[in-house]
Length: 414
Image (cartoon, rainbow, N blue to C red; front, side, top):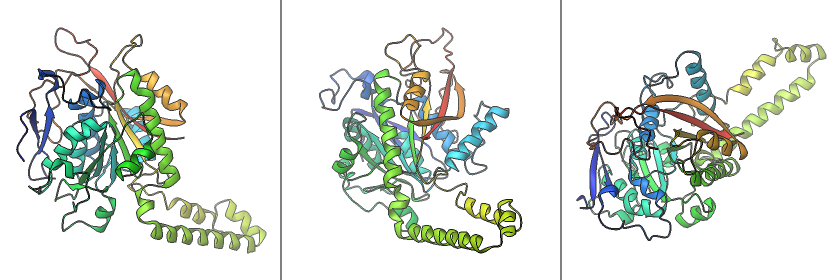
């Protein structure tokens, strides 16, 4: 597909998971002489224009979810939380996520912007639904999905991305086909990762938008967001959206419960039947055996405890009762006295007020002098270095060093 003249391309190597590098197109908003093409769109805001920018938080979240995930799943060479604190964070992540390896998992990205984070995760084998406001999705996200189809259909136009088409490879497993989102495009024939997209406005009803676009975004294993709430005006809509998605997932189930209802219902019925049999056996036991069972002795108490925990296997899509968890990469972009930029305490308080548990699972400090154009394993992303400090609050020193601490939070319903 020819590159439109109003875009510039960024090539991102994804060695080992895809033969060709990802080719990400983005509109150079800063250098546009004319009025932005989306300025008068109904859903367009000046804040939405930052969706055409690459933010450092997306690099950190991608690296966290891909590097070293195949080994122990939690160690990170970039984790600055070492010692007791670092191990506590990794254990907390195990408790809510099970495994951070997202291959074969369904991922929902909020505020995807140009789509680099979501497409890179798709190249690594995840099934990603990229969402943003409609102007961003229509103008750039769909174009980038089509541009990175593996192997792309030369006849497919960007407007066809939201139309149903077969995006699976011949070697795709049934689980991959089931896990992929509706109207997906295959991004890697090696990992069978796919990508789809839909507009999702945080100020509007999630269910109404799902009905309009024919995709239920809450049917995800993991929700991700990278530096999406740097403005105060975005905090409440974003938190409400996360809370709404988690509630809908809890009420209506993830895609696993949706697509494998019969199998899971059979398993649940078998478990209930076994539990009823165990209760009946306990009632029929002599009193001395019941007392022994309660103490966890050979009468069956220990065995019952083990059976109750067999369902909680690390490495399943989530270890949160089958419900999704949200991973948010965040850093302060403002000061406490700022009337424009959000701060950490404000964000955490908003989640707490909505009944969400927020657990820090990874911290990392970077400086603007470290451009971090390593999205995967050390390749140059081809960027010209003009995006590393976008959205900063102007506290750079004369020496070019501006160290910022990024934290990845795991968010679940309490």
